[in-house]
Amino acid sequence: MSIELTSSPRIALVTGGSRGLGRSTALHLAARGVDLIITYNTNEAEARSAVAEIVALGRKAVALQLDASQTAGFEAFATHVQQALQQTWGRDSFDYLVNNAGTALYAAITDTTEEQMDAVYSIHFKGVFFLTQKLLPLLSDGGRIVNISSGLARMTLAGSSVYGAMKAAVETMTRYMAKELGPRGITVNVVAPGAVQTDFGGGRIRNSPDMQKMLASVTALGRVAVADDIGPMVASLLDDANHWVTGQRIEVSGGQGL
Picture 1 (spheres, rainbow, N blue to C red):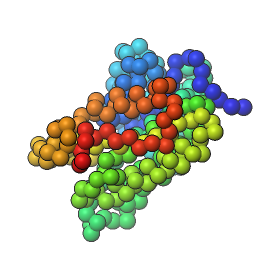
Picture 2 (cartoon, one colour):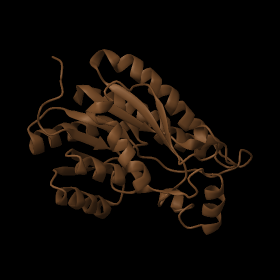
Picture 3 (cartoon, rainbow, N blue to C red):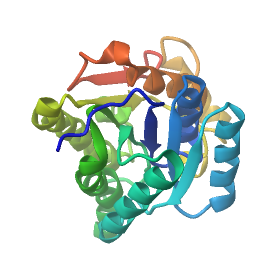
């Protein structure tokens, strides 16, 4: 039996939705009338805070724990999503999936270990692939998927070879997802932010005025982004007005590295 978008409020699942770009995306979706399931890895208090902000905007929200790098836990997570849908919304499906969760790696090629590469692969590529696979039975026909990439899949910055390469893989995977899920009316796109001032990577950019100055100098709009430069764009991509956009890479970098 096929699952189709309902006339009830839309529901989005945003991984890593308790902070940074994920939180901004979730809040802007809520402002557009979308209900939320957000995930967090370890900081439950931060997730509760995000839920409170969403509820203050008049939407329903649930926070679920997820380690997006551990595929062994995905089946149980899908069960928890299904339970949350039934208990909170009386539904068996959700409408939008944003694969946002991730971690940074800053290491030269000469210094990168196999363990470091495996960790980046597990969360940025393998995790995205298999989490999406597990959640597809719960995703409505006509739904939307947005994968988060990085400007580093196009530009190069010394010390980001593994991270940039994995994000490039996500971009290729996105096109395959768009092709294979097209018969269900599901669109799949990838958003590639440029440098953003958040706590990502330990706040490496946020905490370094020198790095901000350097990055601003190679950005057409003349500054480094903040999370709220990215979240609204991701939220807008999920809108019905973009139902004919699929398989596309959209960079949101303020013209960085042009």
